Image (cartoon, rainbow, N blue to C red):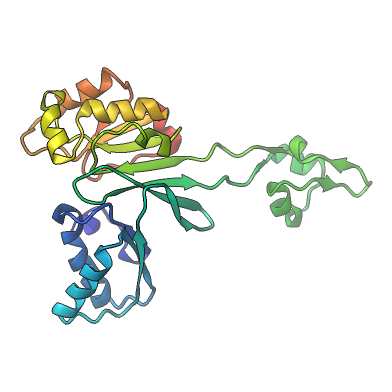
Length: 267
């Protein structure tokens, strides 16, 4: 329902990342998998989750006699160090351990550096044919008809710095976490409790707003979104205020809101 409400096309979803197997993070998955099948999906779906979820998923499909129209490629998450789990043309994704009551993982999505940007005036000045533009964007020099070599740096501009996004939920604060997401563009970090509930956070394996802010500050993040708030909070302003006292560019997660990483510094 939320995917439809936010106009996210089901056919565009090819990778699903599950941090841990508590109900609020996986119960919605079963209906989604069945919906994909009812819609006639054929492409494989890549599912990343803690390794013990593989058997649980298999049992669910068997117990409910579900026969999907597509294959699920299950990628188990394990270990105590960051690991590369996806590397395609556009991004890399790394999973890293969190500190919760059960095995839990965060994810770091990093954009790959784009092509260089050709200077439009240079095309006319040096009579650069359209067929040569792709190679120039990839770093090649250009040789004019008179034999003069034009260095790439003279006719192109470097691409923007690669953007990145880290997702951290559910977890207690621990010092090593910030090293997994160093210099991340945008960090989402759970902030289940206010700072005065620090003891409860430790018991339940969750973070306070101050914990989230400290991770963002230590990681050198450019912006922080906090969420996963306890239902006791009808107003999240105090949690945001607490976090901002440590890390200024902090915002509360809003249902359905989209963030443009190229505009992150202007939030």
